[in-house]
Amino acid sequence: MNEEQDQAAKIRTGAHATGSRVLEMFAGTPQLNDWYYSKFRDRVSGDVLELGSGIGNISRLLARDARTLMATDVEDEYLDALRQEFSEVDHVSVARFDLESPPPAAVAERQYDVVISMNVIEHVHDDLGAVRALAKLLRPGGWMLTYVPACNWAFNAMDQNLGHHRRYSTRSFERLLKGADLDVERLEYMNLLGLFGWWVNGKLLRKQTTDERQVRTFERLVPLVRLEDHLRVPVGLGVVAHARKPLHASTPPTSPG
Image (tube, rainbow, N blue to C red):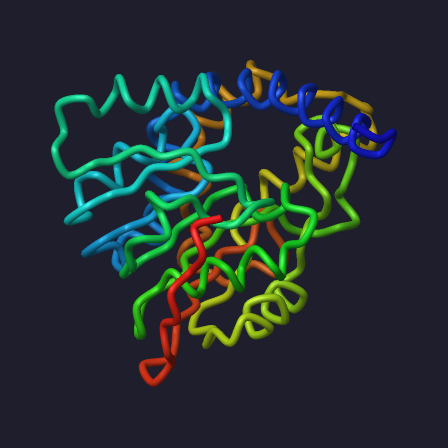
């Protein structure tokens, strides 16, 4: 392993530890998880591939709407948790999938009506290459549903400790999706209050990780915060995107790697 690879491994190990704590926090925020999922629910049907499933906070919601669900992650402990969670759910499968590498055979041998990821693409060094590979897994007319962190000016130590390479604007994420030959049909910011909190904590207070007490407080505020669903906020904590693979697109087989 060279010096660059060694440094990348150290960053990933640290990000995994921080991410595990964050996932545990959000396991206790059903209202917040439902709000995020509501941005995609109407598009979820048929055969679904979820990226970065973690401990299943969103997977449980997807499993209700999908005909089949392939839940994936890169961390072994998350995969073990997913297998245990869905051990008796016949239409849910679990596989290891690292977006820095080609799709494994268990994923690549199938085509999907929906590929969904929430807080995943920002972790990938070559985000365009990853999105292009994912687009190949979609059936023509299938949906790429994505949530990514927004506003690069809000990037701070909390992003670094989670292993983020970047944050996006609606414009930069639209370019990314179009670069993978996808038609962008919905693109918007969400969670204006969350962005303010992220900026204050990371930039002003110089916190290193998400505050569990603040997460619990935010969970109680979700019914109020969701009033923004009736508006079009100018910025937000994240970007929500619905992009579609053209109906005329070909679907060449993907190498399992």
